[in-house]
Image (tube, rainbow, N blue to C red):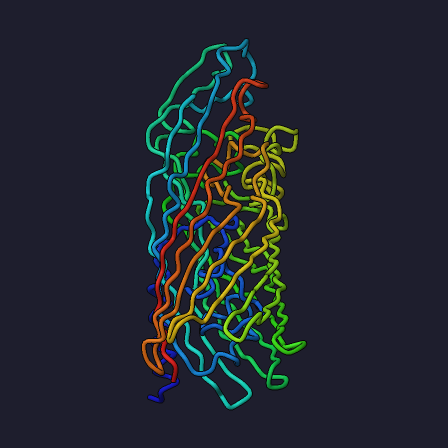
Length: 455
């Protein structure tokens, strides 16, 4: 077996390991960065060529990386992530209100379980000749990982009687778990010695489960495929294109675009997600610049856009359950119902993220990095009820990292990230008007390391 084939087998083996569950909800549910080096500069890097995971940000960078392999992992902690429900609807005159009776969470404050997640990554790049390369990069997205034990919820039973049942939504432990794996094959070619383009074919795998949501069955087109069905998975394919080049001495521009990835349906949850369980991966675009400010230092700045609004399961508001586009029942009917053709979702908006990094080649074999990113979290105040399950409220990341060149062909990389605590607060849209508010809150930590080989 040739060396390239051997390493490709290794790449696929590592890909299987990366498919292990992970969770991170940083920029929505996209990671703030993918390689350990990029994590050290807050994920900026569309105009740089750091390692063999560069294709996750810009496929054009791979030919500038050379022959190398990178293996790494991060320990991620989205903790604490919590919700705080304050106020109660009481027992209003509810005779005849049916499925639209007031529904309260608690009142209570609960933190999610599951505080630590291991997230591996892998990359291998081969130079085909002096001007072209082929590489494999393996990385992940994830998020919306929550598990709320305990607590209660209460609702009017339609006859003016308030009933209380255990669990955030009255169906025991409530939560969701989403993880996504990407395996990319990337071809990259130099346009001239300082410019290049690249294209990646992306295979995506995702899995999901939900628990504790059965009380929304009256709003679902298929209540048997709404909650508590274990893990389901789906696959899909997409593409990523990129370009980067030096426009003046020490100044490099870069840009990349990843297509929306059409995924297969989650059949076990076709009564939860819009379009009968559809959960596609949104398109993204990134532009940026890298400026060599001194012979030993570089400033990077990226702007990234994530189009969550194009994915109905993520973007549609919860108000579709009550605006007349869903008729409650067993099953419910109408396009706005859970699982419907235009069904209710999490109400997420598009995100624009600004990433700033600084890299300094210090004494001898050390390179140091710092970074900061800022983006408006995607959850409107009107969407807090469902987003108890997905409290992706993070807006700011502060990062630090380094590389130690341990030999002419090997290096150790390290990165640390702190996501500043943030929150969103709004009305429970299923409670009596003005009766209850829910605040979602989270902060995060991540520490990671990788080992790189140059061949």
